Image 1: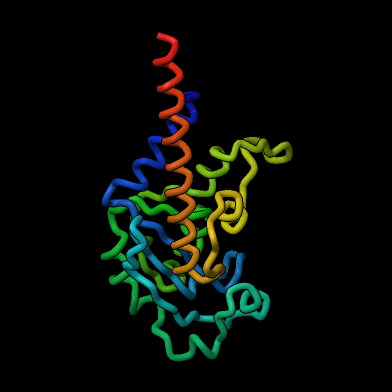
Image 2: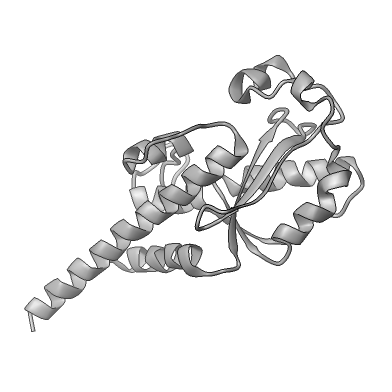
Length: 202
């Protein structure tokens, strides 16, 4: 097994087996610097849901965002605002390794939402499943350099995973868990095959 594959195997192994690892996903009002989190879910690597909550934002959800995730302003009208959920979310993720598919996005939107209410960002060890999967997939990105990033849906399709839902946070958490476990299984098989090949030459 190549050295980078060995490193990847250790990353995915830690995500699968370390008890302090959780998967997080958010749905939001948009992509810009004013966007807010309107749904957040956290799941452990066995698929156990640790946190799953809709959140009423400060500003209305625009139609283009609703078309993606289907979360309407009417749905959110009676939901709690972020400060009412902040400490419960903190209890679930604080001090953990938080794996997200596109971690930089989820980190930014969670921080923007904290900032909007004057709350400190919850300190966690953010790790990105999308970047690790891109390296595993190994397709070179000639425009940006490095490896081509794959969407979560595309990654699931590439790994032969049936998608039961998308663009809702708990469904995307589950898909992320399944992608991680599928990649780990493939890397483990590759590692065992390499070990067998080495033994056969002795």
